[in-house]
Image: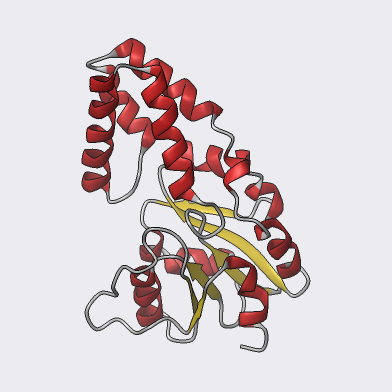
Length: 212
């Protein structure tokens, strides 16, 4: 089996900051300002509680207060064209990976919206269905590497703290930090090692891991 390369999605393959800004704009145009503010307040509460973004849970909470507005926001979420937010060159980069590696999407997120988002972005097709989604992926490393076996797996993420945890748990893995997006400069957890490789753009990945 070819060596696996586990690819994060948000701000790694897809510009999630831009996608969220587009959502904010569309929601602001669709519902009154006070309801839009309430939606994003609930969004932050849900994220704090679960430690990952969960749009379905956020919409469900809003529907208890503003059912019609929540239904409109659900439609906006389902219609957002995530394909346009994929980073330039990311699809071609995945095709390059297929020549020598097995690319796998490994994402945090909710089990309903996140898979739809990955599919609508065209990323699920690009990795030929190799998509794994967990609430906290760095806690499921044994499952991940059992499903996609291979020597010295590569983990790619925009969050150094996640890679630091992976590096500590799996010293033989290769960790690649992609310095893209709003979380790129977040610090490591105390005592976690630095990622093995840092790149500025996801298109640099194949060259960065070649020979490692």
